Image (cartoon, rainbow, N blue to C red; front, side, top):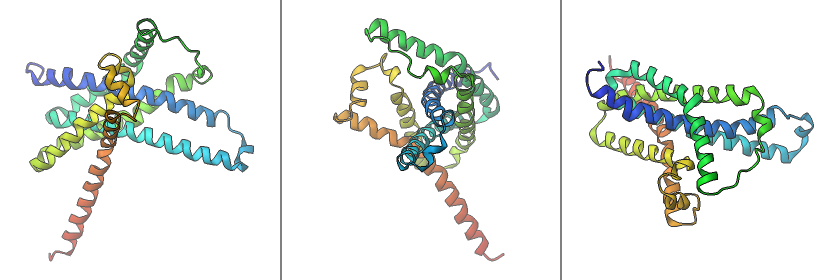
Length: 255
């Protein structure tokens, strides 16, 4: 199988970069999420139950975490969809390779990437080092080592494998519909790169500045791109509705 060019193109052009990108996004999400989880789980005070302000802040936190997790799930599903559509005849081996790449990215790749970004900011751009205000969170083994693996397994690996199976059947759809899906998939990959600000330090600082200052016209356009990330939700919902309609039609047809 590996004597041809297509498996190597899939490995080097899709599995390695997508696995690394997903690991970086997953690490960023798990880092921020761990702080909020620690804040409530390890510092819970039953006296706060009677405080209306606490419940308002708690609901806002849950909503914020839900958006972050949904974004990570959709990005992972989209990456799997692209991989499955491009190499539908190698789903099993590519699933294993992607999971191995995700594990490598979480344990080795992402930590090295963030360490390099920190050194780049400090020595190249002259950004002063700041104290780690969240050291108390990550002094605990669960939040430092176990929680990131749980986030990646549940919200990256599983959705990516699901997306691969969905992408393998995309050739059965109409060409116009496939073109829309591929456009959404490509835009989502671009949005994944955009949401990781460290990558733009090495690509184009002008675009990064526009993205993180939404008052600029380019900033608004780039931020609107983030909405495309949620296209898998619409796609899966349309599939469920379509199957339900076909089932109803078949149930009323004469036998």
